[in-house]
Image (cartoon, rainbow, N blue to C red; front, side, top):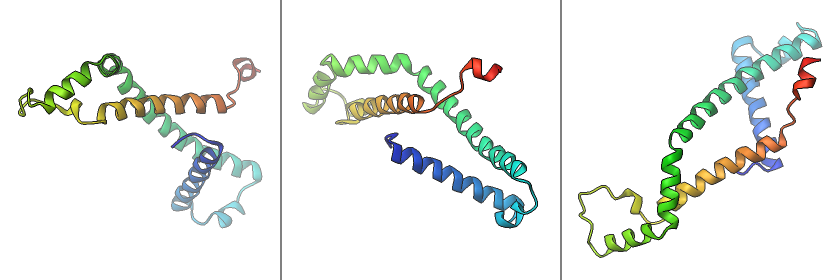
Length: 144
């Protein structure tokens, strides 16, 4: 999914809906619970619930990013393999039956390597676009 403003709003709405559902599972119907708290308390409760979801998503993103970084050298090597013409030569050799069928040849499945590298590029691009759209507090603002 591309990080368009519509998709980002849908993502926010989905998170809000999930947060509300999780909250109601634990505490009961929101409208009844809201009556028991001041606006400030309610805001803190709801933002604490949001925080839990965001914290979990960030942890999962960190794991995914670590996995990608662990594969960085392989990504670079596969990109070079694809763009150098070597992949095409190997694909054609396989088509001619020059590569034994019992050998692993998954990299030669038509369009799979290209699609995987393209998806990688899309994921990184989406992360960059999200970063550009989020207004994070500056360090100076945090300290004041």
